[in-house]
Image 1 (cartoon, rainbow, N blue to C red):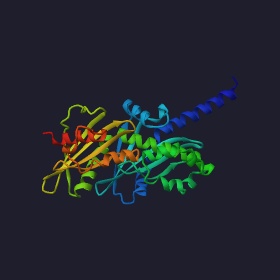
Image 2: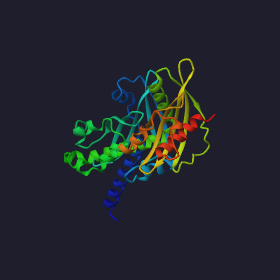
Image 3: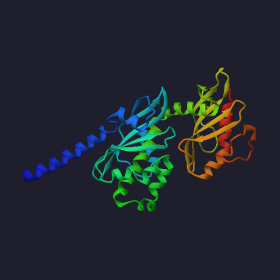
Image 4: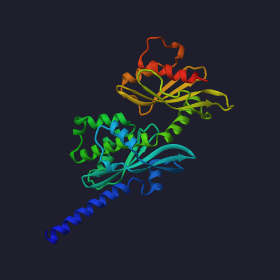
Length: 321
């Protein structure tokens, strides 16, 4: 082999290794202070949570995502929890993606239900990037959840309506958003659960509500004919420390419905609200669970739907000593 070909081979190898190294290193905010306050002008501070993606996380993402991940996409990642006067107000996560013009770093701002607040490019050489950020595509991403992005990515006609110089980049952004949401939900599940629990309690019972964590009394999943797992339980207390109700987090897996669900229960045992993490997959699922609200465990008969069986198990857990 001539020296010229050896030199070219080494050059290509060096470029490949450099890009791989960049993909590993550029999963964090380069200028955290500036980026945090650009995405959240009301912020007063932030804290960083770093975690390594394990085998169980990879399996969960492979199950949830509508496309295949490269093994090198998942390693150690950082999540930024944005604070205002000590209270969490949002999340930031950065993902590195391979683009047509090199590495693209997408900085995502999400709320605690993992709906999109906004996004920007921390690094992108694609000539269509500026136009994409100002386009209707970017505007419509605001408020989108996992199911919205998944449906959008599958809608070839909708993507085909975009200008050609933006379409490929838009598809990459949609995939980046789906990866970000799936990764954040699975890897930082416990951090999110604590933040969400306090938020749900205060939305339901007032800004002064406090939480007292308690261990689930159900040691194993109840026999309801499908997977229902108790992941967290809290007693909600008022200003005088009087119990106001309960908050229970369950994981549920039914055909077409794989979700974590929050159950807010009044002190008298009445189901006040059912809230899915990431939204309901369709109107039928939303109706099935929303019609459970304002019911007690005594309202369920021997003949029950899957949603009613879940509610009965949750309300039974609430009544357990």
